[in-house]
Image 1 (cartoon, one colour):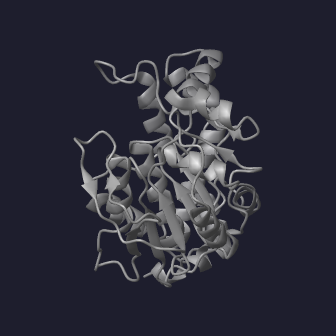
Image 2 (tube, helix red, strand yellow; image 1 turned 60 degrees about the vertical axis):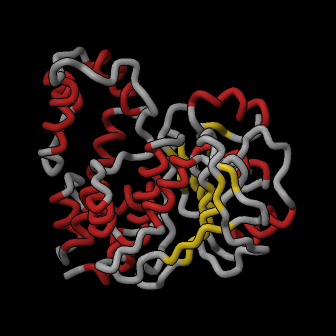
Length: 330
């Protein structure tokens, strides 16, 4: 499993200042994702992000492939006022970024800030060294180009995004939105992330390990495989046998496992653990039940199993997670 999500313990009630970095040949779609996610004012959400679009160049910024469109962006010399920088895109054939930009991004990272790239922005992250000993992804069309330029970086094939709490990158297009919602979820919890997604008229958040594409994504009628996933989601609190899931999908166990990995980029067992972990996090945020009860109602059965999975995937305990978002409990 290539995606690695280990969010830091953040303080949700402290407003975070975000810089959206404009660069030459800026990709309009990814810019729109960044602004819709973090720059749109949401007065109903306490301490929402304060976001500016900035540039390290004084000349107008060109918009990639958009009929010679230019925009003027405030010029900065550093990112000292910001807690997170988002790089919507970067001209991946450009040889080098300006030194002052590199130093500003690295300084932000070194003082605990987050650096997030959307689609081609990953080339800038790689160039300045922030992907050393980290996993990375990018749009599958440009996999060869990325591997050729940065052979030492572990490229994650066919995932939506990679995010470890400090550095994140997405495969591009709609995957940028999935990464953004994951960041909002880490900062504000599931309730606020779902609220923001609804305001953007988005479907449910897709986990980063999901496949970028499948060869036959659309079928004329609902299929048994999808129905089996719905069946499992509806009974996460109960024991679920993988062979039973395969039978419900009218597949052999071997075919089911192969189909699962092709569609979800993980095993059925990993998927079940992930869905139960999501459910447990929602329960921890929304009520004050004991850890034993949360484990039972999320399908982990025992609190020891729940704690093990929290430590494994989130690097913190269920109690620490609940404390992180205690201000959202009603």
